[in-house]
Image (cartoon, rainbow over all chains, first blue to last red; front, top):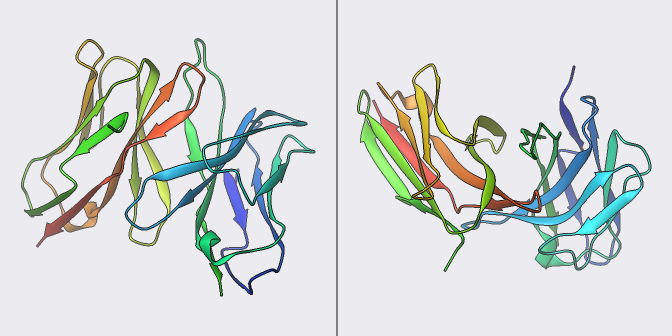
Length: 115
Length: 108
């Protein structure tokens, strides 16, 4: 049971390049999330998914796209990277218990630098 | 005004001290999470609370739903407890709203 796995762990991109971050979970969770964390700020939600085939925008979705073709995978894409997207990206997953209580499990993070 | 506020923002203490980190929120919630972010960046979920109190080792978390307040306590603090502690609440739409974190440094 690996939990939540993010790949890659580090990446340096040039402005305008594209890339995809992969998040995989083996806990059969319905909910998956992508956050970014910037210095001095809390985590901000980029996009999330409440189930296979569904995605929704979070707080800071611009410049990102996501896909949830399989329940266990949640992909975050940057079509044309910008220096403002330099950040640490965290993926998380959760399940529903009873009346909406959820436990959150996090990946180790991806440190992305856009130059 | 942030919907989730933590205090203090920074805390430095000596090894062995009793530590308290506070979290106040202004929205209706279904649950509150305390998480720990290590200097290397990884995030670990410590507690999920909807009422009362939970204890795990030297960590204790309490929540008062009426006062919209939660506290995280660390007893017999140790340098390895040095980390950022984050409070996050889950609102009625199942979204997490994050506090800015409390950076804790425990000196030997």
